[in-house]
View 1 (tube, helix red, strand yellow):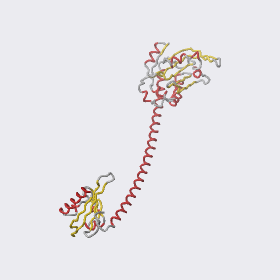
View 2 (spheres, one colour):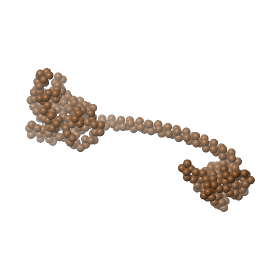
View 3 (cartoon, helix red, strand yellow):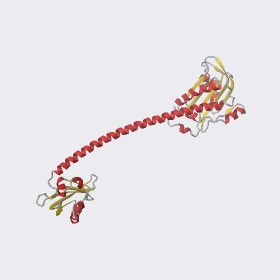
View 4 (tube, one colour):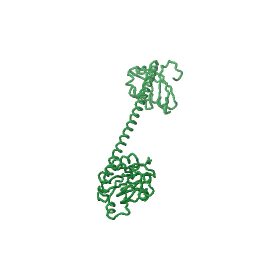
Length: 350
């Protein structure tokens, strides 16, 4: 089973797959030594599906192009076989399928899989005990796939006859490398494209979920807004029914609201009052009196004072009863004030 934590990027340190030859001539050794195989072959070993696709595509192509009668490949990851593929131009020929089961012939595979040696042999007789028959192999090549962690598999090629291109041809390993490299590049390009598509699909789902949550939040917010507006409208209606002027201001002295009676006193609609302060409606000496009384309310939490003032070309006398109000976080929000006529009983507060 492939390690879920391994990805193609884990194999960037594999710049090449080393080929080591034993028991062969120096010319072949020299030719093979300089050939860089595609390091992504090892990445295929990590995923059996990719490895299977790789070998299904490349083994027939290599055999047909180079004149081999058959080929097989084994990829092993962490001691477990993750892919095993064989290809033969002669279907009854089951050399690779039985090779590892025949104890007398395990040595080539042991050299490749255990010791990481490339095995090249000629004129082999393979004996099958179960059918009491021999198969003559003209040439057998076992190429290990290696990493710094050890051998992870091997690719084998065999010839039953010598009618095709010899493995001694200088083009053999470069062509094998090219076939595998081209196949891997295409497979991994498709794999990466699939991953990007899957990632895009996942992001699309997440985006849609986020939109659904946002729509639900907006609907909930709109509901709260409507309820708040209805509540404010009801509160404003109640305040407007109070026969005495009612105002409320923030700590900066700006009007936050008022009732209709205060609109009548100032001779201005509420929309022209909110956001303005006393100095916008009263002379300086009256403004200073109001502000001083506000400071007293902030100091003691409430205040009550009788003030004579001019407004809308009319002289008025009122008992200003003020009280501090607080924000939800406990901070002082401002002052609310109701203005009674001097002869109106009000019991000193709201």
